[in-house]
Image (cartoon, rainbow, N blue to C red; front, side, top):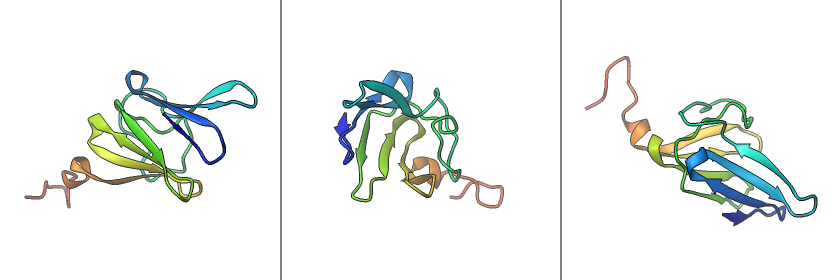
Length: 105
C-alpha cells in the first residue's frame, strides 16, 4: 500500500491480481491495474482492462508519477506510465523470451 502524489491511496491486492485506488475525497475505490491473473498488456496503451498481473505483492510510485509493480509470478517489474502505457522492465521473463523463434542460451 502507498500514497500517490495525488493524495490517493493505492492498495496492492495480491490474491486478486489487481491494484486498487481509493480516493479519500470521494470515498470511491476503483481498479487501477489488473482484471485477473495472467500476463498481458506489455507495450499497449494502458487501461485497467488490458493489463493482467499475477500475484503482485508490491508497487511504488516513481518520481514521474509512473507506477512500478513487482509482478511476482510473471517474474518481472512492470511500469505503468502516465503517457506511455505498460512496459516490462526486466526480470526472468524478458530474459527467457524467444529471439528469432529460439530460446537464447
